[in-house]
Length: 122
Image 1 (cartoon, one colour):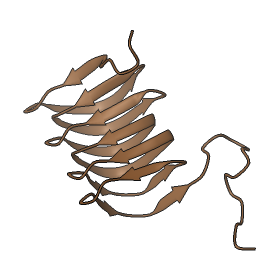
Image 2 (cartoon, one colour):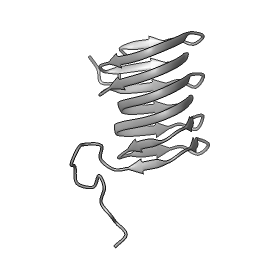
Image 3 (cartoon, one colour):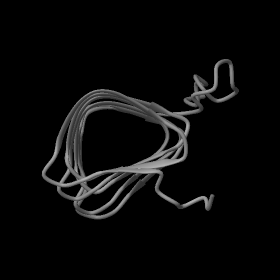
């Protein structure tokens, strides 16, 4: 399977509630309320609204998220993104126009990894 290939698609105009576990990549264009857990990539489309806890390898956001986000590799906020909640990720890419209301913690999510909680003030 190609790296950018979408494994599952939750379409526009649909509502889902519960826990989503997946491998690879999943795109949400509808409404989702619950928990998303994966080492893969979650793509949230421009019209989508996702509420809850998100723990993924990578997040690509064009729509709206209300909740906590942990991304092991990277978070990308496109210009139409609206994230209301906290982000923890080692890499954050933000396009002009994106909205982030919450706290950002940057550092490795790997347990015991160097840099996860280093004090860089000295």
